[in-house]
Length: 129
Picture 1 (cartoon, one colour):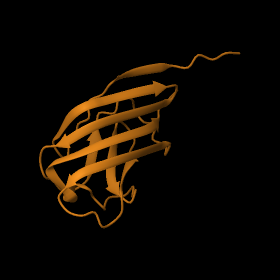
Picture 2 (picture 1 turned 90 degrees about the horizontal axis):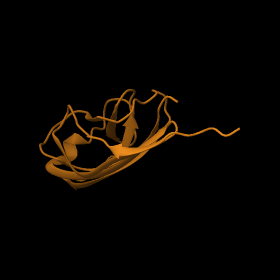
Picture 3 (picture 1 turned 120 degrees about the vertical axis):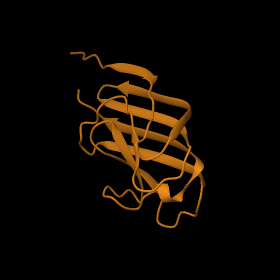
């Protein structure tokens, strides 16, 4: 038989407890079934250190490692010498940005970013059915 698959598009609001963000444009999501893809163009408005955590995902991640993402950072304060930045999903409605795709603390991106760094990101993750 035929099974109807949920489809939804909308906007989401990226935020962070670790750095001030200014979503510049295009913070959108598409949900098809139990997969959600989010994208955004964001500018940072301060310098910071520690974990780069982005919150506000439109749906709660199931907590399993069913996610893939990419990010492009521009206007970094210093050269990147320890790997490419990667998106690492945590459970709930947040994700981390770290160098080399590490899921544990360390290799933090914030120490490399200026107060006016820009980034474009895309992430696909799994939610409950």
